[in-house]
Image (cartoon, rainbow, N blue to C red; front, side, top):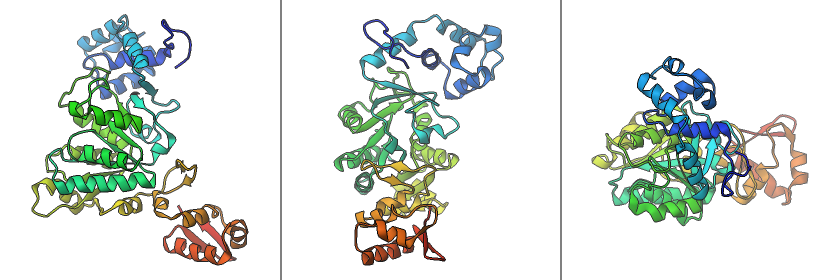
Length: 380
């Protein structure tokens, strides 16, 4: 996107972004069809320069869709959508460009354009999703709020779907902690669903972001909810399931997480509770049983790249968020390349005896390893 004048002081969209918008607005062209077209032509701009016969050669594109794509080339719908985004303070993030969420970019079917209201920040790479039943019990709601609040206090961004029940409880738990949270919608950003969560959506966007891949005015449709679940898991390092029945949509999110290589975790419910049948099944089949936020942070593996927290501290593994200030300060003196104990003691701002005691704790937590010759190395 550029900052060139574009009627009424609205910035001029990049040509590829505008054509991606055009593609997104063609009825019947969903994420998979978009991917087929982009793989065939290489760019959205090339798609709209192609003739009908060439369009029809793309897998899944018949004469009807080819005509709709051709008609969209001369339509003003994409320009109007762009105007509305600018007027409503909605940002468009293009896959492969700066600002696009790093976790989401890793999945095979990531949205080519992500609509966002609020802010996406680098520290949101340290994110965990919490999803579950809309018809949750008091126990389920209580656990969702408690775990979300503790994760948010530790510096983790809580991702969910703004739905009734567990999703709403997770967002509210993160907000109560003064932390960051992200809501992934199955509708457009101008059609909050369910409508009674409009105020919650505003709070989420003020303390994180609400995002979607749908056009601004997209209304709810049953098929769009399973589709958006891949984005919930894609934004996250892991997914926590709380109270899911065996036909729950939350299990779709768990399946997406497995396919994407994300950690799948579940909070156990009563063995005779219908509300927890699906989540208990996940635990039986190998999902990590979690009881609290510490369990979650222990379950998550090392990060591909370090993430900076709000305090500008570098985190290489979510487990590090369980450390107290002294432990974290000493850990940050130890590098992933072997370093002498003497160097660590010289740079520490606390007395040597406390540094040595803290190093022992870090070694027990498998975050530091002692090497021959008085050397230390940070484990990832």
